[in-house]
Amino acid sequence: MTAVLPDELTRENTKDISKNDEFFENVLVKIKARQWTLADFDWDKPGAETINPEQFDDLKQFMSDLVWIEHIGGRMMGTLGITAPSDTLREIYSYFHAEEQR
Image (cartoon, rainbow, N blue to C red; front, side, top):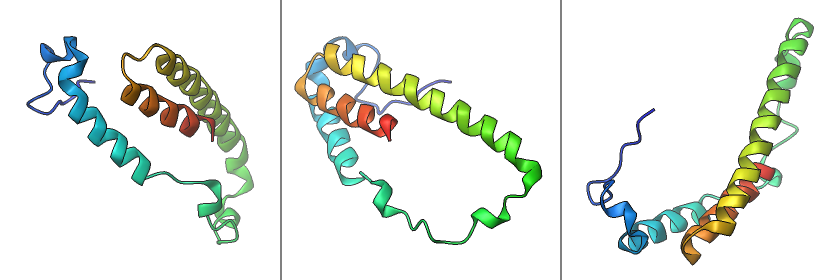
């Protein structure tokens, strides 16, 4: 997968993280604006009854894989937060870490 970067964020100028402060500040604002909690979901909405018993085994495996991926992602984001070169990046990684733990 190739990341598509804004014009001002090129491989050359990512070597000096301070050049990207404004970019990361904008990312942080978006992250804070889009936070959610489990309480945001209507758990009484219909839908669970549409899953038939033949799907249970596949669904269990899918959920198991998803939980594992989220756990590994959370650990990675927590570690990146510790080593981040700026306060803004540390805060971004802390939000990502919390997100992966939900």
